[in-house]
Image (cartoon, rainbow, N blue to C red; front, side):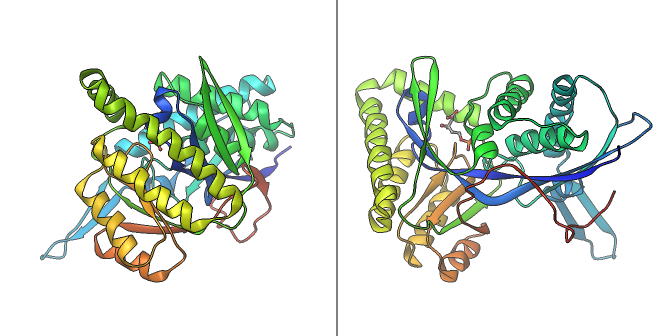
Length: 339
Ligand code: PMV
């Protein structure tokens, strides 16, 4: 034995329907070609080594003082939380193969951690798949998605299966809550979907934002319920536009969806500025994506001007396309081999 296996698993954005999906309306999620990479190498001493340089770098800030001293500050909170997903994913992968074999893991991320792009799910999926494959075993995707969802539930207490499904299968998925379960239907796009993702640090957690919307709904049901229902209508129309390849209509629906999310109070001034700057620079549509409270926005565009406009507002930018394969083993000799 002694295999070295590298796996990549994609992040995701929500095109339409966040928050409304909590109340039974549909949502539409898209896996993006930005990845978490996990390399696993079997060790013969039974120990586990984890090298997560990139996860650390995502939260690293370096300041050079006037006297030349360098002050480095790492967002250990984000790193430690990402590592708790790795630890649980390894335990669950060991249960799956039925033995405990030591490994060195190298974890890298092309996405910011904790911004709502589903990095924790991608870490869980990629860690399980890399471990299982490095030991010479197989796992089918349904089982992989189920185990990775279990990791999220164990670490967070509760989790929707959306992110782990996206990281496992990739593609576009229409999510329909039905009673206590969730139906996920793959959607075939009628055209390529060019996205610019802009992100800023998050100031509120998903849990806080979901609770805030619930309080509003409970205190003003007659006002808030129609907004939630309309977001559901937008998601259904958005799916049709996507299947037809009607990017213009998709953009218009994103704009309306953003206005409604803002009216629920989940946007921030900086997210709004990025959303409007993207439109002024020529995006067909733009909206916050995920829970809000800072974090990410998406713009339907492949224009460099849109990226520059978001950066001018202080956002960081990733340009993204659909990932239609989901988690997979890669043979990429070009990746740095640190282990
Ligand atoms: O923060 P994200 O990208 O995981 O999005 C959360 C989406 C919500 O609809 C706000 C919550 C949920 O569980 O669906």
